[in-house]
Image (spheres, helix red, strand yellow):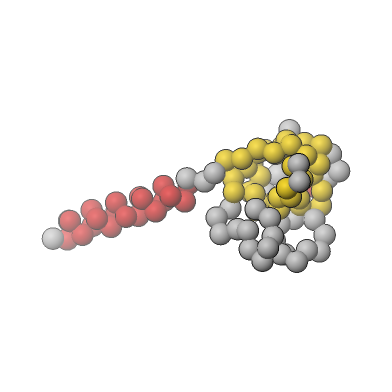
Length: 96
C-alpha cells in the first residue's frame, strides 16, 4: 500500500511540475521603457505593442540596458496576471 501511495504522490508531484513549466511563450516588438508609478504596481519595465502595454520583469537580463530602445522581447506570461486592471505580466528571457 505504501508503494502505491508513494507512486501516486510522485505522479501528482511530476504533474504539478509539468504544469508550472507549461507557460505561454510570447514575443513582442516595441519600445522598452522603465516603468514609473502605476495603479497595478507590478513589473519593472513596460513594452507597448500596438495599443497594448505589457509589464515586464527579468531575473536574468538587465532591462535597464534596453530602456528607450526598440527591441523584440521573448518571455513567458506569468500566471495570475493581469490584476487590478493592469496589463499582462511577462518574465523576459531574451531581448534582441
